Image 1: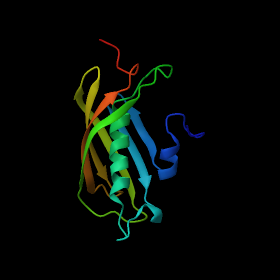
Image 2: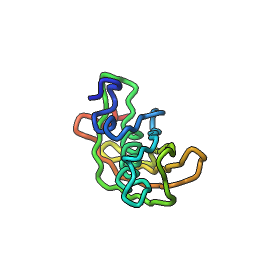
Image 3: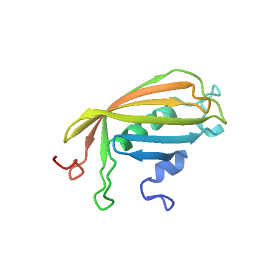
Image 4: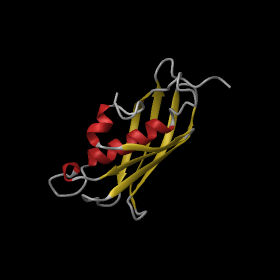
Length: 138
């Protein structure tokens, strides 16, 4: 885990994204785009955008008010739609919300906007809770 934030791993540190908001059924992940995030055409690499969507969605279904009982999940399916170009210096926010699910699976939608609020990507996913991470039965 990252020495800076116990909820983010080394991959988050490598890419440079940060969780900026996290509560039940909602998460936001932010990233300032660097030159090394760009593809050979000079725009954001699709894998970086996919990482933001996947991460925001995964976090939004795994919020736990009890730090002693963290939730973890794995991606089952992820769909991404790339809508507009992103360049170095842009600041992105991926905002995800849980749209449904149950004890083992959850579903999320995500929108990614730049610093001007312009939609640059969106996606949706299906995630499976890791054994022992399932929500309490209510």
